[in-house]
Length: 105
Image (tube, rainbow, N blue to C red):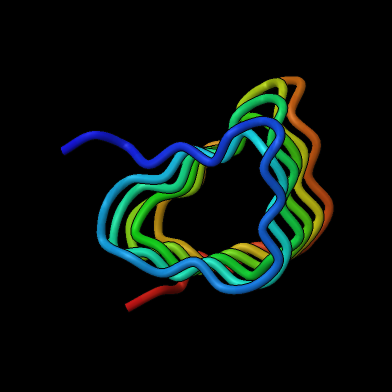
C-alpha cells in the first residue's frame, strides 16, 4: 500500500484519520489519529496531538504523541510535547522538550 503524502505546499487544519501510512511534508494543525506509521518529513511542520502505532519525526512537531509501538526523533527532528510509548529513539542532535512515559501496557 502506497503512503499518503501531504505535500510541501499543503496546509491542513483539522483531523486526519485513516489506516495507511502518511508522510507529512507540509503543515498540519489539529489532531492525527492513524492506525499506521506517521512520518514527518524534514520540511514538515505539525501542531497536533498524534495517536498512532509508530511515528518518525524528521521535521518539527509541537504536541503530544501516544504511540503503541515506537517513536523516533531523528537528528534533524524537533519535538515539543510529551511522549507515551514503550519504545523511544532520540538520535544524537535531535531536539526534544517534554516528558516521556514508557510505562505502557
